[in-house]
Length: 264
Length: 106
Image: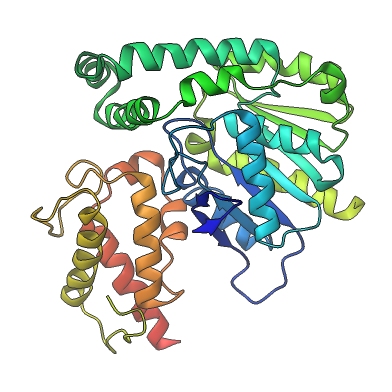
């Protein structure tokens, strides 16, 4: 556990096991509600460590093993946490940021706030914070709060029948988080980025999308706004592409990181 | 659990099972589960209802006990998603015993 400016965050850090000095740091940021650093820990993190990277993962506030305050869940709180965490870990140089879903929105926000500190950015099923993003997440979170958190037995019975036992257990965790905190109200009320602020992120950005996910529609939007953007669409996957296809996702991130290692 | 306690020189599946069971009881205690039966055929997901973040805690306990030879992250990263869902205590015990055995002959 690391004290990141007044909040205790669960951090896992790994790296090459053969004594090599890591050539860069990669910071992995997970998504909302049902997610935790475990989505990286058991998938791409060992691969990144074996490739010679210093790998930092953490649980977002309210998630996994990190502290769960009742309030303070706007995007800016999450970016502040990331900032404080890296300072606390003495990670000062530019880092390669990888974010899954909402984690990518946090990573992008960090890069927008500190352009010199992002060596590259990978957005897995993710997008920068815009007004449209806030409205979409607001809709999803309203459903979680109204249908799940306030009518849990019925909602869980439906999810168990239609999506299985495992998803139902994850949903129970999400309902608890929504009930115990102001996250559902805070995230849609987050300060978003202007187009100029998005354009100002000049580091290489990789978008990774599931072919069956509606987020793949964002590719042309990002391409128009971002000076250095490339996209990978993995067919046959939806929003969970990171845990379903960690092999290809990890390989694309490593390509991006090693291209940057030569140039920077 | 005492992290500095050395692993036995020749761990058998039985001693590893006893160790792993103790670690799982530590993890489950956070949920107030203290009388769950744990055996070789117990599954992490369905029987113990462990979440993936609980497996991160277990990975830390395994490394404390056995050192870096036992790397749960690498073990699971080599598996398909469905295999992880079906993972049993017995399969983990076999992996741990195998890793320690390799370590001894090196």
